[in-house]
Length: 143
Image (cartoon, rainbow, N blue to C red; front, side, top):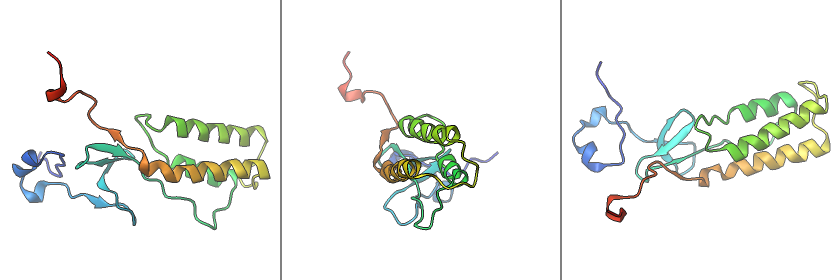
């Protein structure tokens, strides 16, 4: 097996890998985020941080239980970095279930307001930055 698509935050490492075997960073939509996306998490190799990108709901989004669940399911976070957001989503979905809404029923005004607020908050995910390495740099460590 021949390994390719290498991505590193170290220029030294990348200098030893042929250019054709390096992963190219990709542009995500029309934002300034450049990185490699794996398991729903965007790695910005140059900054050595994880971040997220969530496509906001369209203006013509129909707020029914089916569509809200579909949009919430697009938040894939296997490492749990977004737990505060996903908990809010689960509470919102639980409220929809407890109201007895069918899949294609429109949300009432209170649920609609909750859903719109939740999706508006998700646009801030691109500002969440989680350092990939959680150790003290060597020059700061104490003997």
